[in-house]
Image (tube, rainbow, N blue to C red; front, side, top):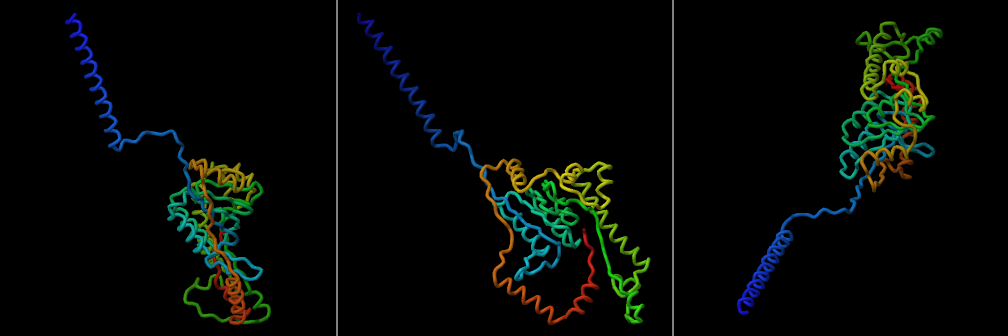
Length: 318
């Protein structure tokens, strides 16, 4: 009887000791977990947010832009737009850019400056062609990752033009002389009062063909057209958005909603915010614009203004 009691006592002691050891191990493991940096995964969804910036390119592309006046709109210069693009690219809160284009083109320098600024931005970029995105406007669109255009927009027009007025025959008809002193054979190219010779035409055509070659290279590089498509596009004609889609000049027909959807899907955004880069024009800005226009009229007059514009011809992508 006594042996049975001793045996039972031993079993109870072993059970108690085992329980205490297991408890100690469990509490030790819990203590290690609580004191360490081990994170426990969670199934809670994380909202990915970011800002989408819209930058507007409207009207003729110019290195100078135009001031706002009463009844006239402010148009930023190419430098202003390039600055907006750089600021958006440097802002860590902005994850993508929408370049809203409504432009028939303009100065080669202006389009190139804006395109180069876009090329420097390492973020998702979408071009949104509204009414017109031709020539210089399309040149800029080529520097984005995705092009959306309205089905009735004017798109394409891959070409360069340079035009010069000629008044030399008019002067000769009325026996009016025009004296000039020129230091080089081609220094007076573009002078409206001098005959536009075949040699001068060859010089200008060489410049235009060089820029056209760069334009075509951009199309080939960014759009991957077939030879048949390229032959159609390089005629310089413009296309409706629906035609441009068939020629692979754009990626999708649509508007702002489609441009935003592409960014949201590509970046997997669940909580995007939208910001705009544009100048807010105040009453004093408009007043200053009117004063500037009046000062030009009084200070230079009509004739000097005509002469100035005639001798400052610019190559135009349109």
